[in-house]
Length: 197
Image (cartoon, rainbow, N blue to C red):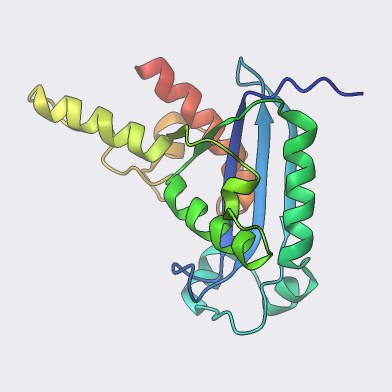
């Protein structure tokens, strides 16, 4: 039996738009990390949202999904079961969740788990409220610099836009706007931000 030595959980999503009430989840990825931020295992699933979820063409341009790929994805109910199994496999205690603009991912995942019959939404699977947001960390460092009369070290706190955190820290080899690529890039950016701190 695998020892449950997960301490941190990185999460990223791809969606059909920006609004959880009307758009849908189309990809979920995660990485279970140990105390030293080493990757134990990753999780990735393409997801097909229920009928009625709107698809914003701009979002599809960003993430590169097609309707055909979306239609091949697993249902909300199935992704919830598989993700719950991933969490149970690696964590004996509440993980500290890591994300790049984590409130966005949380809002979508809460909607998905609620729609799938989990009364506590996403909190039914990832209990606790400890999280680290790499975008917020970068913004905090920007604020600290401004308060000292120095220029902002991170003109863009985006993960993947030109001049963003991946570029700033030279995080290469992770495909942008894929959930798993962004999970792995977020881990690398977090490590670099911690070195900056």
